[in-house]
Each structure stands twice: as C-alpha cells, then as structure tokens.
Length: 293
Image 1 (cartoon, rainbow, N blue to C red):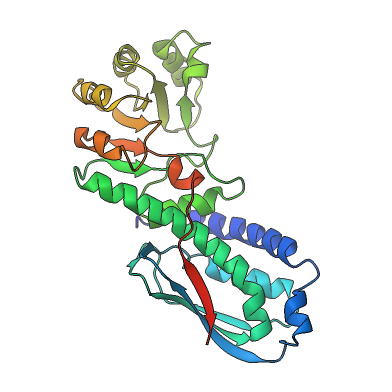
Image 2: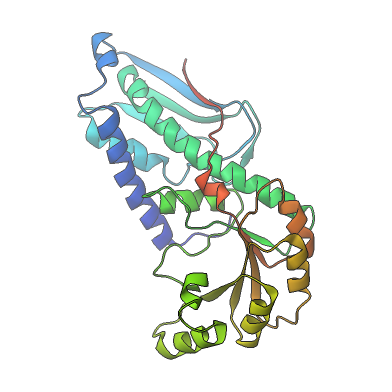
C-alpha cells in the first residue's frame, strides 16, 4: 500500500463512524429481539471471522471505529475484537481475519454489520488486486485508479479499499481537481480555449485533466500542454496510436469500458494510468463467516 496521510485516515474514521451509526440504527432500532428472547445476555463466548477464499484484506484501519460505534449504541456492551490481518495483505482461503470475545449477545448483534463492512471493503480490494495483477503481466508503468463511481456516503471507505488492493485514488471529489469533460468543452470552443480559461481563473494549485474522445482532440490537448489527458472510450488500437504521440510531459489515462476481461488488451501499450469504475460500483463480497467457538 502507498503511505496514507493522517488527514485521509481522519476522514475515513469520521465517515465510517457515520455509516456505522446508520447501519446499527436500521438493523436494530429496538435492539436484537432474537438475542433477547433467547436470554443470551450474560453468556460469554469467543468467535472467529474466517475467509473461505483468497482475499486482499481491508479492515485494519476502520474495524475499531465500527466496534466503538456499536459500544456507543448498545449500553453496557461487552465486546472485544482483535484484527489479525494487515490492510493490503494477501491472505489464502481459510485464514482467520478477526477474533471476537465477550457477551454472546453482543457478538451476534454485531456480526452482520461488521461482516457487511468487511465484505464491501475486501470485495473492492480483491477486484482492484485482480486488475492490478493483470496489468502487471504486461507492464509496471501503468497505475490502476478508481473513479467517483462509489456508493453515496462511502467515498473514503471505497477509495481506501482500492489502496488496500494495490490501486491508486483518482480525485476524491469535484473540489480537488479540474476535470474538463465533453460537456464542458461543448460550451468552451475546444481544449485550447478551455485551458486558457483554467490558467487565467484557477486561483490555487490543483491537478488539471481534460477528457478527449478522439485522436485529433488528443493532439490539441498535447499542444495545449494539458498535464493529464483522459482517453475516453478509446479502443486498444487507439491507445496504441496515442502512446506513440510525442505527448511530452503529459500523462495519458485510459478510461471508459475497461474491465478485467479486456484490461489485458490495453496494458501492453503501457498507458500511464487506467481508471476503472467497476472496482467500486460492482462489488462482489467474498465468502466470509463468523463462527462462535
């Protein structure tokens, strides 16, 4: 994993806390009725969370926030959770990810929400890892990035999971990058005119990227010295032509329609970046189980 700033981790903790409060509120607004009628309160036990398939782990940085939120939600909760894996670690099927101990009522009440968070985080990390691994078969130059296609409210959570899978983050939101797309260019008379506007009016240093839809637009962006150029829905053949251009200090990013099935068609041309929405918007949760000993 790349190094993570304290500010990034603070945003991750804050957003995860809000998400966990909403999760417990919707899951047990009047408590866990099954645990209550079975008189589980007062009985102690231990449990493990295991994975039944190979996974890239994601959870070390935020699991404590979920547990602490549960403690604040359930008066006199008696629950202790120990994480046995490191974020970004690749683990084989059958690995124990976490151990839980305390009141059995709290273990079973926490179970589903904790597994939901783990399933989403690990699912994104797994998908990212698979795309990165496929790219690395061809090149070590290309970075795999996410997009803004995250679940609403889960922006930091989802993008942190991408880092755990060996990917990189694209812009976090609309406030931290100038990204000029086709709809912007339609009203500004082309790439050169748009860059003139940006360079005149941008009052703080931010990354600047322009989306191009064809090779003539790419040439215009290169001539305008655009720092980041997004090749929108380019075919692998078009990417090959793009990478053969004298792009100078510009970085070229492939985006649109890239999947695990075809990323190997793009990677041999070694674009600087490939951004993929599917790693966060089409999450497949891994097979996880919590088992009371």
